[in-house]
Amino acid sequence: MSPQPDPGGAPSLVIRGGHPLKGRITVSGSKNAALPEMVAALLTAEPLRLRNVPEIEDVDSMAACLRALGVTVERRGPTCTLEAGALGSVTPPAEPARRMRASFLLLGALLARAGEAHLPLPGGDDIGLRRVEQHIEGLRAMGATITETDDGEVVAHAPRLHGAHIRLDMPTVTGTENLMMAAVRADGITVLSNAAREPHVADLAVCLRGMGARIDGAGSDRIVVEGVEALHGSDHAVRADYLEAGTFAFAAAATGGDVELDGLVCDDLGHALQKLRQAGCTVEEGEAHLRVRRSGPLRAVDMTTWPHPGFATDLQAPYVALMTQAEGMSIVSEFLFENRFRHVAELARLGARVTVDGRSAIIQGGDRLAGACLTVPDIRSGAALVIAALCAAGVTECRGLHHLDRGYQDLVGKLRRLGADLDRTPGGPVGAVGAVGGG
Image (cartoon, rainbow, N blue to C red; front, side, top):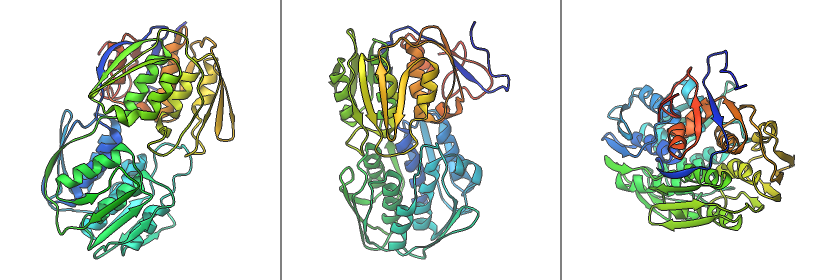
């Protein structure tokens, strides 16, 4: 008997597993690059045109926050034009702002442009402690006065920011981005030591340089920003989403398929591709092109997440799903977040043998999974559950699709084009992950 749609009216994803993924798709633009680049529009009164913007819920939430501040946001497919000619507010609406952690990026840009900001503390996926002290201490070093209210808001003032040497305790991605955006219009030179090196951090720097910012070292652990009086409008193409690409690469390997991915930077996936090769997959890298195929058994390979250029924490959950299909035992350790194994309990419903010991998951792979009814706990766990369901015998229903809607554009359509047998039941937004009967 097939799982039934959620009586509460929320959409669900019904997956009939057992079909190797085969075919070719194009990778969408990066969520983690597009969101800070949308925020960068606050730094100028002139239009900023972003191309290759993913059509996902987090982009819609950020657009709602920016519109509430007085920014004109126009969307035409993957193109988003933003114009912050005159700000009408420095307080984004609480509901969309609390929905995602990226809303806290508004802090640095608003201080640089307006000299003040009122923000709720960030939300997003519940994957563990993601503190914002480094953001706040860095901005204080640049001259901002920041207080936290009892009801969970951050109130910041800075008539004029100035340069500083900021040494980050950890290479926080959003902290690096926040401070970089604040620094581009500050007086003097700002140095960020132990900066995050993720591809989306480097892409934000490319976007800001196109707007007239002076930034050196983005993509390394030391970023130097020389403040300028004003930025101007620009046209920028958002970098491809290497996390989406990695998810599809793991899905191809897990199902024993043969998938080609277009439009990405293969170097962004360095460690993930290394693990795929070690596991017995054939990986071919080209210019903006990647092919992953598997014809033999999958080998168990241990993995530990690490800040870029290490193995991305956002690909840990999909990797655990991949290892459920490997012969033998593998250990996956999560260095960055203490609550990022929420997919394990759901994988167990499919018959996966995974146990958590502290910050490590121990996977006894090779057992055939069987369909079940699952609940998606967060974006990347959702990707893991989809991969496992594609491998499972029978029918799996995944509920809680708003998480997948936040991070993956047209997931159902792309999987269908690769030969997967799945549908999305009615009851919610369809733009992000496809609709029943559609591609």
